[in-house]
Length: 378
Ligand code: ADP
Ligand code: MG
Image 1: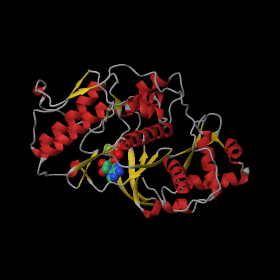
Image 2: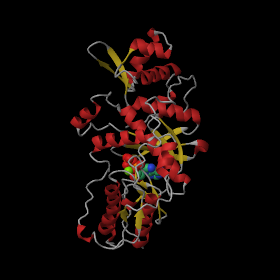
Image 3: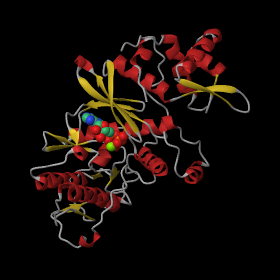
Image 4: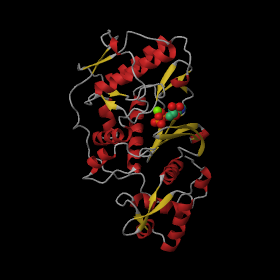
């Protein structure tokens, strides 16, 4: 993926209007016909055709024909441009720097934010891979419109930002969230390496306990990270773990909570054993006792990412990734120690709160409808 700041700088307001019109039109058209683009952008069809041609050349949109008409659709780079323009207007991103990460479901860039400070821009890329289980997808969406990559990626970014915010507000070691728009999140750049890149630790037991404590503390607040592994833990100053990557977080009230919790714990145990030769008989176990200190899960729902959004994203991720976690090759090769005593017991509420916080939020994109006239400056 290339994020070319020059392309943004040289994009005219009219081109942005056309791009935005295609985005709005895609809410109820798989491919957006030119007359609708004209109507939504309030531009003359003569100039629209020229802009469409230019946008296709620059690979921001693509043309496609249905049995009835030729139309246009956004591709990822077009969507990126729209989000960047919004960030630019808000001042949260003023220039784009180097790409520092590319995952299955994201691209990560270092960008300059307010006061030229370096921050991280994460672009969510759900749907980049084709759905693994096409049949499942077809069954699930038979009655509804098939979800677009745009919708899925936006949902994922919205979730990540909502969780990061709530976790940050409650003192969890996560990057400071800065802004979110469409499929993108802007956050603090953590000056640290992922645990994956650390070969040696003076006191592996110390970090091991810190990580297990973090898993337990999350659960006491009603949450499970769901992908708690050496790729998603950044180690600051070789001692302080910072947790990242939240699109797959689940509530401790989830029907598979125990499975996700144990998987997180196992990831850490397995990694410490393999990498540092460190093993401990002490590790937390999930228990169904009711003693939740706080329900962050409910707070997240209240912040705008509803239970309905949550369950839909879960389904989509399951379909796309076959289970959610990004590194499923991590196997626990030592499963006969399940009976060992645990150092702490995690306590969670087993009451279902599926009905709470479900405000029935629809698919409309509240912050993407303005077709503004401001220049985009990178
Ligand atoms: P993915 O969903 O693709 O796994 P992550 O959020 O885990 O995306 O980010 C991928 C990589 O990018 C991380 O392993 C880390 O190296 C880097 N990264 C992500 N966020 C930050 C951040 N806030 N500060 C520093 N590095 C980051
Ligand atoms: Mg990750």
